Length: 105
Image (cartoon, rainbow, N blue to C red; front, side, top):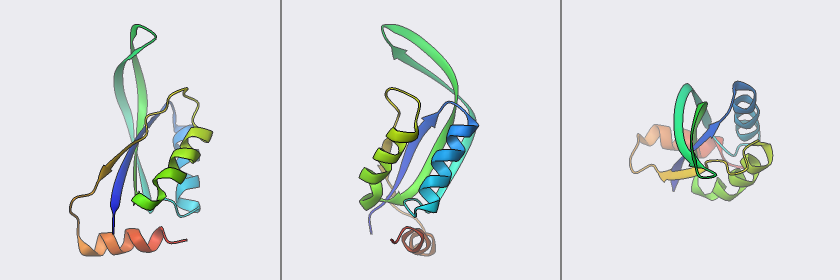
């Protein structure tokens, strides 16, 4: 079973809730954690930008990644949303079983 965590920053709680609810409701993610008050500094249009954002931590299976990218792209207000997947290299057997069960279609 190929479990992943996806990081996605969003501008506010409304967008965080909309994306999180959609992903869990449609069983694309078992859980989405929202970390408030993340300060991001990045290059944009030749300038250094700084924004307060919310970091979504999306727990899912790799098989759902492409669908999740589409959903985030459709619901996200940014021109180039951050959608980064990292493998879960180890976790408890029970958590992995729960994650797989909750993301079955």
